Length: 574
Image (cartoon, rainbow, N blue to C red; front, side):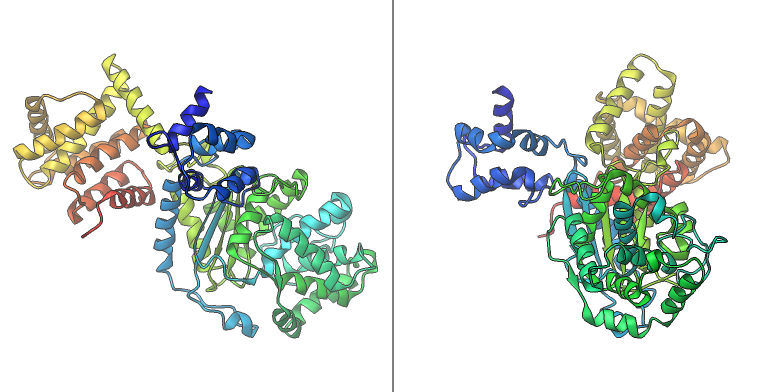
């Protein structure tokens, strides 16, 4: 009962709460009102309207779904600081929005005439936390995003051995629409056109009693389950007819396949092609694709319905194919730089999976030379520069460039690091003392960069140090350390107002090999607190922070997130 009372106190004011307050607390965790795990609680809240809710009523309302309410209230979902994470995603979203390079696909009118300014990003975690920015509810044809799911459908129906009699698992290194085949005359993989056409033939051959459109509907039903039925899956007849009218190269691939390795169960070539082109003509939104991606990230279980849509083993193989071949013939570079399973389509969609964490989807019609969305690829790159999402970030030895891990509360982690540092310094630990001294040197050197330290600046620095180290420094000792900084700069041949700062940067570079991510973050935090102590970051201070971040090998994008966070905390202009 005590724990239940603690939950109530999180939303109560003077002994009562309201349905709106409870709903807001759930919403702030990232959970939507349509989440199946809170269906009873949400329904009961909706019946209450604005009437006050006391503790006994609260207990009755949440009792059937107490575990989920507890997780949402206590920030125990996979991304605990959901609102902060959403703000960080918005920072990257706005940064990418300025890129207007590339151009629409132009081989059919519906793609050529799409609004090139469309830009949307949608996210769904494996715990069903969701957000969307921009054009996330605009329907567009999924095009090649359909390919890995057609492969997954075939694997689920036909099994691994039979499926791979007709398609390989190797990246091709060739354009997606090339006629090249493996030495054994199979297509390279299910994500190039030849492989996707063969998968369409495999699916069609397994349902001889169904028409091409009925088979497409079955696959559309799979997509609907993957995205939790949040919106209807559409089909574009216009896209289908245009695709068929311009499909000479794809028909050539189909005839080549029939003439070389043969088609599955001697399926009718035209039925196979109609299934392939129809799958490309399925229409969905970025919001829907993000949930489908999260279902894959969750081992085939849809986060917002709890349904096992695909077997986990099928999902593992599908993600492996997406990893090696999902981004057309730029897949190798994408894996190197982003390190995540993804699939793009020429209508402008990119669907990305972060296993065990989340899925996300972007939509922007302008494409690069490889046929991938310019903004979509840029967003992916910038995301992994700021977060520990690359598949190999886990082997970084504690040196990721101080990228954030949204699985852990950043505030809690930083407070823990500071507590550990204070404790170690108090016992004379050499490493901790070095980190503390570097933090102090950063504060002093930034303050000295505009000349002598004035009394007010000394007080500001003392306050920042006290907040970080939980002890009040001796002003005289700070003054002495400032003098020592200036003297070290002179000894290194550096003079003038910026000499001490230049000496600091060089010292940070020398110390870098011995500093882990946690220590580097704390050093940057100390510099940041002094720079923004007056409520703004001046251009010169911005340059200094970037110099310190560069010397500490902290990704510039991580610093930009910190600056954006600081700016969000400023009072709104009157």
